[in-house]
Length: 465
Image (cartoon, rainbow, N blue to C red; front, top):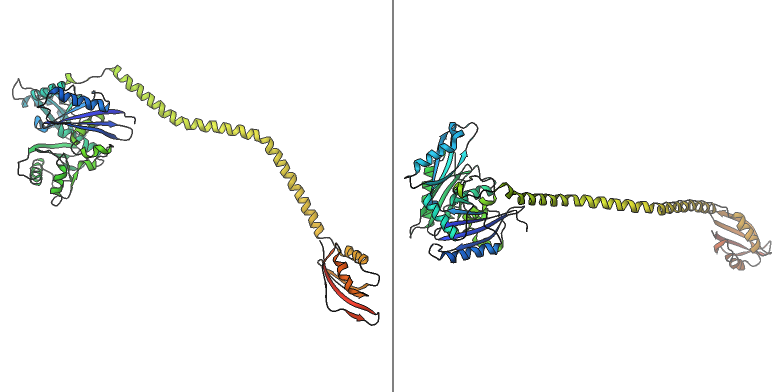
């Protein structure tokens, strides 16, 4: 299969690393492989790196497009409401806001922001600001460096999950959804509203608390903070994570509208990856951010000087590949047209070579039709000829000297004759031997005529056409 782009998402999920590979083809994304590396913090970095190297080697992919996902507890989310007049100088205004959040001069923040809504007639700018302490992100990056990973982008896990959900749902941008990522130790609950993430919180799970209690309490708190309008309602609750299936069983009676994110994703995948889909959802969201250009919330916490900046010449292989693909597609389109033209030319040549024989056949057919008409005409003439004279001449020859006819009738090749004969019984075989007569039969009795002393007879016959 031909893949246009490959992306790998690595999620830091408590003490584990979740790695998912997502590839894009002409139809959709393909979830090709997944790996979970447990207890990576306590293990030897060389051992962990060996498992990561095996994953990349098994998938035969490079490490150019790796998206790192940091947990919700490591990031700071703020929603800014600014006047529209600052739009032309928005970056500087956001920088001032970030500096106001920094606790000390030594503890800096890495950040990025996205404009959530900016209608032409709106008077306010709504901005999602995502920040992370420099020390925390540097620690993550150093750890990745030991594992042989240099991320191309760093995202907050809830943002990546929301991006994938919004990007794969055809009608999700205008509705309100609750996304719940259920881990073994707690829950990450987010609210997606108007095509953007408007709330995200991580909460731990107490030892004896049920998923139902935890989820309902977190939903109640989230709805209270978001402050929905009177006409707004929650359109759905979508759960993911390794504990989502068991939580759905607890909630199916009280909250029947709960769905699993895995049931809503339309990625292609091998059968072996289907059981990992729920647990790998966030890492898939990270990988999805690496292959999709139009993200609802395009955020990258990686400092600008650490990002990969492609030179112009680096686009040459992509351009060449694009030209090659376009040429191949054009060749496929022209192939049928060329074949049709070759076929038409061959057919024209064969038609030209057959014109002579066809003309001769047509001439023979015309002659045959003319002869057939002549034969039909002659047959018609023969069928209409009068046989009277020929039959009378034949009777003159066949009848003996002591026999003469007194009456003779002919109609439509049927005749009746009567007369006198010295021996009428011998007349029937003689008449049957005639080439002009058939079906000779006696009609009525034969009786003697006393005046002539001969026998009177009456015979019927048909002419032989």
